[in-house]
Structures are given as C-alpha cells and as structure tokens.
Image (tube, rainbow, N blue to C red; front, top):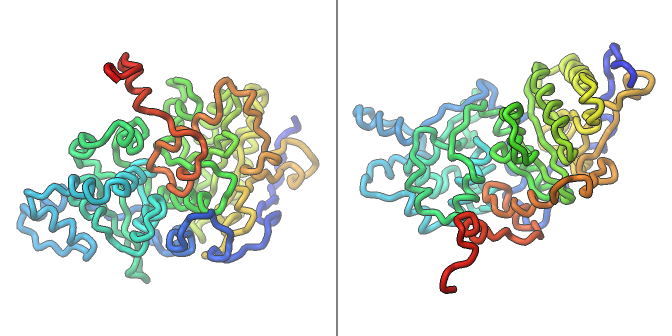
Length: 440
C-alpha cells in the first residue's frame, strides 16, 4: 500500500452527488403520512434549535415536586400544565392510565425515547407513527409519562424563535418499576431491547441530530431494512461476542441493510476524534465476519466548521485505516467511511436524491494525487458495497428479523420486515426449562 499523501485532500463528496431537491418533493417510503415526513420537522442542523447551547434545560417529576413542596409559585410552560395536574392528584395512576388508553403507542413512545436517548416531540411522533401527535406540542400520553416520573422534558432557548419543540428523555430520577411490572415479556423486551431503562448524558444536540438522520434514512432510503438507536449499537450486539477490550464500543445508530449488512453510524461534531477512530479500527479488526462497516458523519455546526476541519478528518481516517498490519489485513480501509451532513443535505429543507443509497467516501489507499486516493461508495447499494452472507458464521438476517420485536425503532420500517416474528414466549419457556406448557 502506498503512503498516505501529505498534500491537502481536496476530494469533496458533494461534487459527485446529484443536485439537491426540496424535502417535500423527494420520494418517501410508502405508508408514511405526510405529517410525519422530514420537511414538517425542524432541521436540527440549519435551524436555531441549538444556537445558544448544545443542551436543553430539563425538568422532571422530582424537580417539580420539590418546587411545589417549597411553596414556589410555579410558572411552568403551557405544555407542562397537564404534568403538574398529574402531580397534584396523588391518587391518580398516570402510568396505568396511558397503558389503559394508549397502550401500544405509549409503549412505542417510551421505547423510542429509551432507545434513542433524546428526541423532540415531533421526532417521537414520527418514530411511533402517530400522525395525531405530530402537531401536538404536548400529547396527553407524554404529559402522563412526564408526570408519572418516566420522562423528563427539555426546553430549548432561542434569541429569535419562541416555537421551538420540546425535547424528551428518560427521567434518570424516576422509578420505572410501576411500568415494567405491568408489561408482558414481549413488551418489556421491545421497550428495553433486553437492557436497562436508563437516562443519557450525551449532549442533546448530538442525540437530536442522530435521531433526525435515522428518521430521514427510514423515510428516504429503500435499501434500509431497519435503523436502530444507540441502545442496540454496542459491540456484543453487533459482533455477537463478549469482549472486555471492546466493552465501550457503541455506535450512535445502526442501519441493517436488507441483506443483513450492518452499517454503524458514528456522529461527530469536531475533528478531534482520533481515539474514536482507533476504537473502531479495533472493532472492525475483531469482526472476522466482516458483516459490519462504520461511517463517520461530520455534523460540526454551520459556521464552526471549515475546509481545514474536513481535511483533518480525512487525514485522520487515512491514517487510521492503515495504522497497523492487522488493520490492513482485515481490510479496514474497505469498511470505514466518511460523509458530511452537508453532503447529503446541502442547505435547509433540501436533500440530494443520491441520499437514497447513503453515499459516503472511503480511502482507496493508492493512486496518484489526493483526488485519486478517495472513492465514493453507496452504502445501501449491494453492487457498490458487496456483502457475502455465506462468509459469516451465523445467519446475518437474524438481527433484521429480531428487530421486529424492538418497538423503539421507526414503526414504518419494523412493520415492513417480512421475516417471521420470533416467538419470545417459546424462547422464555425453553430458557426456564419448560419447552412445552404442561397440560396443553
């Protein structure tokens, strides 16, 4: 392999992509209502959602109760008044109420927030597939979950707008017991992905950007079988092996292509992520099945990034994929990619039609000049990025079929997975030593 070129890297993926079109004119997945499509939501990259801070101001049940106990005159935003009403009714059972009146959608709502860590109310409506919630600033089931201590609500501040959406995240101070105790095993599995119910400490802008990226993939990319959140992005679920060395490796999101290839999405808002790249090199070397690839998505705020930032990221990737003999032998350079948010979405409200195949750039490793050393790859096109299912030690379609159980993934995708629904009841009985039900 030739040495990495020292000259500035001038390859820009956007130059290879089709001219952008408006989001409301792009082809979308069948069955997705117009009110749940990307053009109806705030663009978290170009809009003023996060002009003052990358984090929201959060409030939950415990904070409101403390203020009420202190005799404070609560001046809560209008959308939280339903939550305060719940807290002022000690005999009320908000969790039982939402399960009784909105059980399926309420579980999907809570599953989505748990899987993706942080999202806006309109993003939650799109994940759940609840068109009636899309234009509601504060749906009643959300108010009940907030007042019941399951969710926290986040408020953003802008100097130029007063209509910013409310954010949602798991309440780290809440007790999920009253909810979990009332779920079937299948519902619990869908809600938690078999893991913990927990809060997030990742910056809110990062999470909102990842959720929006996932929703746009679900809407506009026909080659995506399903897209999953951080909850399902840890190393053992991707690789299927236990490894203490890789225990901290986790993707922000994972797209499972319809042939079973797993595309890990790693969002970054700066060029200081050499360590993160090195971690992913270790992961890809350990993935002997070569069933996983990773794409770094640069999301530096408009006005804060520069061509120098982009070139630094390019050079970092070129160094990472050729950093060791094991990386070269494992073909890491063929499984690590880079793209900018602005490549896919060059301006507010528009998208390149090529986004449908999820285009990205990889370091080709040889050729004369910086331009020849980089190549476009369409991640969702098997002809552009081949994947041999026969080379994997297990059925690559297992993850896709199991995704039908995960109620936190976009409903428009899980509803279309053709693989049979796994029988979790039978699996649970077999694990307990009762493969059949006595007397049946």
